[in-house]
Image (cartoon, rainbow, N blue to C red; front, top):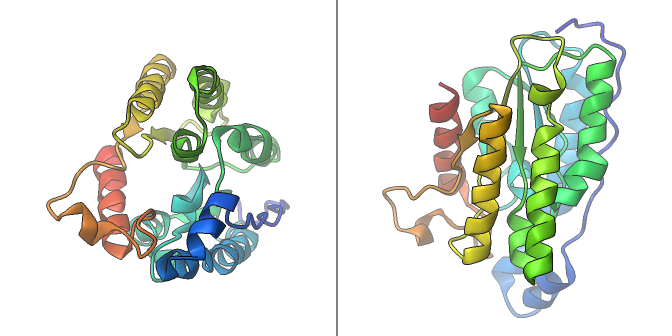
Length: 240
């Protein structure tokens, strides 16, 4: 990537905890403590985004939600994005937003990636990790159909299907969390569309050797440092 690329990444929007999370936070200290990470972790990644384009080395663009920000980890760089970036030497443009749904990826994050590509930025890797918030907070058969359609639209809009000027660019998408019927529907849609487009699927939520309780943060929702370590292992294993 040319070090002199004159591009500015827009500051990341700080998305406060949703109504359901705020309500739970009134009764659970762990929920409050993890929710308090949203603003500082978002701002930390926003600052990283402003400097990475002046650096040499491979670039990774991340489309995602709170897990891409590392919410639940002891610090933002201990999330799976930070761990993989450190071990594999990536500079990162992290476009993630806490609470983001697939529609946010389509309307907020993908346009920024398209703008970066149009100005000559050549990422070596692009990943998309969205859908878990849709599975948890949307309900109804109509919502399921909309989610599958939106996932397909987002995956098809990634550089692998658009044709990026950098032939070395790799694109991958990830599964969503959960074992519910809705999560299974979403993951089938992800795998089907990814197969059609020709990009690998990373199972970020595969079971590790430890009990799940050891990999979950204090809010019982986000991963902790160990959980993110396992997610980073999944990324590295899939990408090789």
